[in-house]
Image (cartoon, rainbow, N blue to C red):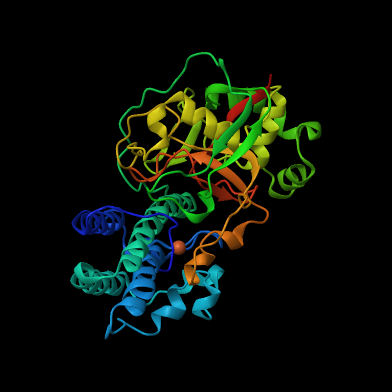
Amino acid sequence: MRNVLQSSRAEPVSSLFRRFGATRQLTLDLAAPLSDADATIQPFPDASPAKWHLAHTTWFFETFVLRDDVLGYTPFDERYAFLFNSYYEAEGPRHARPRRGMLSRPSLEEVRAYREHVDESLSRALPSLAPEALQLIELGINHEQQHQELFLTDILATFAENPLEPAYGEAPPPVCFAVEPLSWHAGREGIVEIGASGSGFAFDCERPRHRVFLAGHELGNRRVTNKEWREFIDDGGYQTASLWLSDGWAWVQQESVSAPLYWRDEGTEFTLAGRREIDWAAPVAHVSFYEADAFARWAGARLPTEAEWEDFAASADPMIGNQLDHAGAVMPRPGGGLFGDVWEWTQSAFASYPGFAPAEGAVGEYNGKFMSGQLVLKGASCATPRGHSRASYRNFFPPSARWQFTGVRLARDA
Ligand SMILES: [Fe+2]
């Protein structure tokens, strides 16, 4: 059997079907406040238009389930494969990523019709699908959840470009952030295990579970706050070359970086709710790996490794090894904890675990081919859909990326 997820599932088809429907609906709900024009803009080459996210997640199900596993399926529009294939070389040529914002057609309405066509076809087919096709639906659900987060961060980037400073939605409810003084949690020393275990869903890059050695270390009990970041700025952090990695220093100069991405004048920041006063007790967000690393050096600390973070998460709360039922700002959140608010940069390169084997078929391109020049982030953010993270989750971005909800937890040697 094709083994696309490297796990075996015991979930009833009815439950998978419900999750499929809920995930597809949430994407539509996220797009509800947007006009066709809002949904067409691509704010910069690494971000995608909202409309493209809606269509690409649909293409994923259409291609890897309906085309491959449903006899007699008729594609909604054969030209869409070129437009909405993201990066799958095995699926042939595709529209250039930096030009996704040039697509005024298909319209948002046509993309919604595309979604409906695929959802109906898949719903009809689902009860009789083979187990390997069901695994691909599970992958497609998790894939769409990743795009839901990108959808929000890309809309934030889109609206941040607009001098009218539009709000995507209502301000999220007040959240009690951890404002207690920073304290240090002693991590375990010695050989520990990291990586996904058990039969629950995990991406291929989270497996196999394996042993790693941890030297003596400590981790901060909370994330770095906006107030602490302000102190870093006031202390000349962005002007002090000795705090920065060479690549980071070059990046700061070249991009004229002097604050987190969405900070504006007079103690305000741009958010999904428009421009607001900065909450100084909130975790700093929208900083790059370079900034996180420089801040940690300024603070006399360093960034955690992914193994330190994961072992901390697993030992801090045994439930954390399972799917987290946390929620984000757009999907109201409980606040606090290791999961939520911001992803946390680690100093670990996104690389393969010992014994890693990419999933078979075109979906093998999902993670493995990106294991170069990117850093692992752990946790989850306010934009991560409910249930879409776990201790072994490995988010990854290049070191200069900061349009995601990315923040910092400090670590130090002990
Ligand atoms: Fe994708």
